[in-house]
Image (tube, one colour):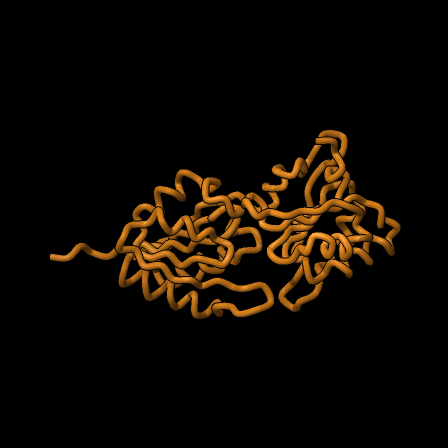
Length: 241
């Protein structure tokens, strides 16, 4: 008599890129996964942890390019949860930081699928590899985490609020908005605030550049930086390493 299938969804953070930077819990879950639906930013080496009979399906979204519609991902979650049981949705970074992970949790619950969440190290935390702490006593009193591209494609208006504090500003998905970010700071008289761009944080082919926020476009061009990258703005960028 076959085992009863228990439909379950595990929303798992794959970390900033280096496969060694996943949690022990994520590692154990991957060891017993029936299906893994993995994103563009999840390191493919993590799939080697799964059982030999585990099904791997790429459902990534290329920045400003081809992507798997969210509705299709939802259908895959539903199909495999009820036919295979243990579905792992492997997302780069942390699934609840600009990752739409909670949308998938809510959808699964509506279908009667048991859900689990496993946090991941988000990419901004890998800035430490570049000697950039996100906070530092007497330098930065907090962190603003902002999306560079809202649903309608525009830059978040929260940036103007963030500029009014001495907090570190971290911008995700902002590479197409570099000119707008630079102009926003410059027009507010803050063009000389230190800034950094880090691409592929934590990976061997990582690239980065430091400069002033008014020069973001030239900075990116000088090192040929593109997606996926994070932008860090604030005095923490210039701390001696």
